[in-house]
Amino acid sequence: MSYVVVARYRTLPDQERTVLALLDTMAEASRAEPGCRQYRVHQGTEDPRAVLLYEEYGTEADFTAHCASAHFQDIVLARIVPLLETRDVLRCAPREDVGA
View 1 (cartoon, rainbow, N blue to C red):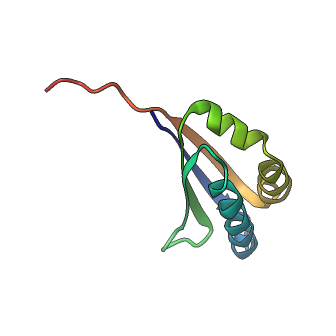
View 2: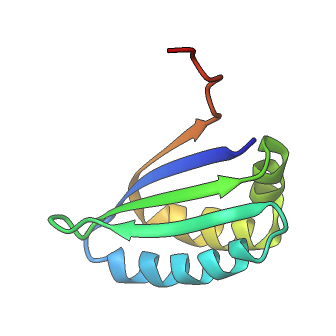
């Protein structure tokens, strides 16, 4: 089973470079976590202030551990969130297969 998180950010004006640099650091640290399968950062092509994160973890517990990590607390909560205009986080679990 995998557990996916999609986070949508919109940076404050002129903060996208700072946020993206911090997310590069965050991605590297997160990919080293035992439960992290994928951590990808995407930037809007038409609106550079729009940032989308795609994260995949083995289990929901792996994501919970990710959120409790020192790098998440320091980088995301303390340094990135104050630079955002908006932040939406969508947590997803796989659906049971539906017979055709």
